[in-house]
Image (cartoon, rainbow over all chains, first blue to last red):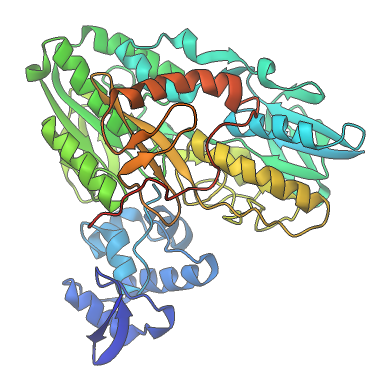
Length: 104
Length: 412
């Protein structure tokens, strides 16, 4: 774990750059994190990100793709358009949450 | 009289019935176990059926043989749990009442969840091997198959026995080599994960084993549909993988009655405390084995370790005590690698599979994450242990909680 400066704020991140402190996140940071991976956040992106943040608060773990689709109603196909190639991982990164466990 | 009701007489439910019948006084506790089937399948054995190593009959025994005296077994279909009324409604309209409920109905492959999976090619060129019917049909197919593009595919995690698709790939490679036709088979391993396996050290090792066997890896592949006409897997990000023979692992979901009862998550698994298996919604409901939403492998070994601890917790729970036997997510499995060899992996919620030695009383140390013949014999021997010691709930010489003894740390 180490400190990184993102959008002029000092935050805790893991080896892969995922934020590790739920409380340090804000939407300004999210915009910068998204830009880091070539995504410009629109309303629909934010809808998914806000769902992930809320869900984490009650569940204590990062939602899987299926869970995002089932609970937020955003179709999986669209999640792949919004967050190309690796939506689960990219959403978690932008939302300042741990990488989804993948469940061994 | 107190009533304990167990739903599901598979690996986990049967172990619970055996363990708790010994621990709960017969004049205080009535135990009932319900299942829709009379057959118990040794599910790890499915893997060997497609290659003719096991005959279908060797993995099936009557469930009744493993239910102890003093436990009432009911064959029937569950309609819904009514947690507020402490009862379970069966599809024939009868009710089973309980004071404590244990859900152990596992997960089932659901090919119906992926468009096109059960299309015209289902069991023609599209197969699963996580059911007895699927594994048997695939054995018939492989016996006469002339070669072509073999695609081994995982639809979505979590699945039962996560290494099984890799084992299938290794065994298939070995099978085709032995038949002198490996050069006529192009093999691709398609997974929604970002590597061969989930945890970094194992993923690297197993990925290397795919490489050595010239099996191509297609990671981050999230299937949207199967195109039966063109025999192609199509992903959400519009990648297409053609196949002549597709061996797929469908989405695994918990029983539909769990959804109808409002007790499931998005995969119909029951949210429970990860240490004690108590339902997060109801104090007198527990879910064990694959039916629970715990973030570990859906596997018999996990159920075994978990139930050792669950048994102690349950006794504390019914005496109004705090449950102190906290599960660590311990999993342990033999990974068949072909040519009469296997690897052993041992891990938990926090510690990924690591190399080294696994101490085993009476047999000697087994090699972790290394292909050896002894591990392969361990895997074959496990079938006997499963029927004769594990299901009856007899003690095994392996600790329920993971131990670091013999393990080596490695740089990722």
